[in-house]
Amino acid sequence: MSEDSIYSQPQSVAPFEFNDRVVQVFDDMIHRSVPMYRESLKRQAELAAHFYQPNSRIYDLGCSNGNFGLQLLTQMGDRPFALEAIDNSLPMLNQYRQRLDAVDNYDQVRIHHTSIEQIDLQSASVVVINLTLQFLSLAVRDQLLQRIYDALLPGGILLLTEKVVHEDEQLSALQQDWYYRLKKENGYSQLEISQKRDALENVLIPESCEQHQQRLHNVGFRQTDIWLKWFNFTSFLCLKK
Image 1 (cartoon, rainbow, N blue to C red):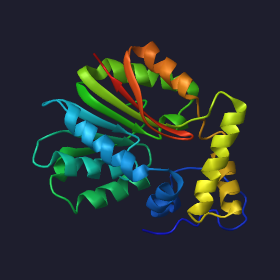
Image 2 (image 1 turned 120 degrees about the vertical axis):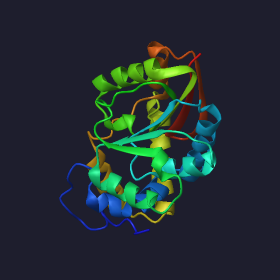
Image 3 (image 1 turned 60 degrees about the vertical axis):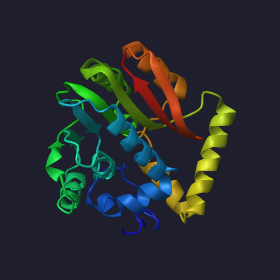
Image 4 (image 1 turned 90 degrees about the vertical axis):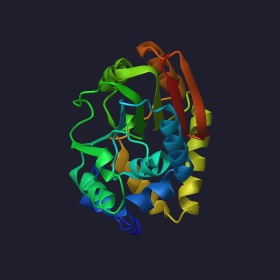
């Protein structure tokens, strides 16, 4: 795992994108930047294995380099399944393919280089969106979640993890402060934190838990839960009756 030092030197900061440079350090970046990342992936894979229905599909929307998919392969064991892994970053998917070559049953994972707004969703029992909705325009989010709900079979599950903001300004500032504390504890300098923040400005657009819950309700989900939360990171579990 290469160390993330992308923003360690003063620079003219360009908008953040999942390019070759980011892919090379992605695992270090995400483990140092996303609290409880390993725990979240493990439990998501367990939930996906639990709710998977034979002859249906599992969708990983914004699959990046395959961290969820590899966890799922372990959880599913010898059970047959179909995982559709979608991402619009070719460097991410190239690394995903390389990692799949080293594991068994990799043919049960189908990789798609396309936008998740364009993928045809159907006959799904599990849909996973990890830290991806936040990179889409606000106008697209409602449409995508409606398509997900419509594609889910009865008894299907959506697992959604997002960086969020609090509707109360004081609590929002508190959450942000504790997040930056975490990043410093994980070895990032103030310069790195500041430049990464600038790179994500107007690229990652977070919403509040209440906004997410209202959208989920609007598209049809009546059983939802926040099953994991760390300050401004939240994981939602949504069941379709």
